[in-house]
Figure (cartoon, rainbow, N blue to C red):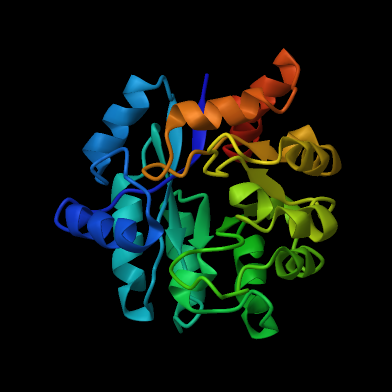
Length: 263
């Protein structure tokens, strides 16, 4: 079994334009057409049994519409995450609505949403999500959209993990894309989940990732591709190079995700 915990797709009407805009500055070629149908086809092709669909409310005015989309696409196969824009005034009611509609978590992207994880004025949102039993999935580390931003620095999430149960926190990109030395120093022992969406290109420092893994613990590692921005096969190569036993691989590929799903 394989569960991919990090997939993005968009409404059919905007998928092509959105991918074109994103690849313009990210310099990645998408592996799907960026909509639901092509994402499911890609999962079928690669033997992925379930995947988490991560939605991002980039603007407060779009928050309700983004969550409508998440709710509409939530299914046994597609596990939708909603979103809360930190500047959206009605987040309490929106969190309630997501919970009532069987959404298990929300996605934050500091760069796309233009907020700093170090800003403690947003902590009540995280605590409100935790109170409702909602997981919080954070983009972490570098992002080409705002390349000089430290909004998603690993230390900032480590500080949040001191105020919110880390079992409800998931750090994308193995804790911080392109700042993995900071992950090892600040975040690896915080108790948060890390996903494997490192956009593996064969040149990564595997010794560093192994040290991070040892400090984090195998029970907190989630298989994730960041589709449509990474090939499934590259992520599998990354996992296979971590030096895991068969039992540990099972935890990464699906068992840890099943715990999040309550299965």
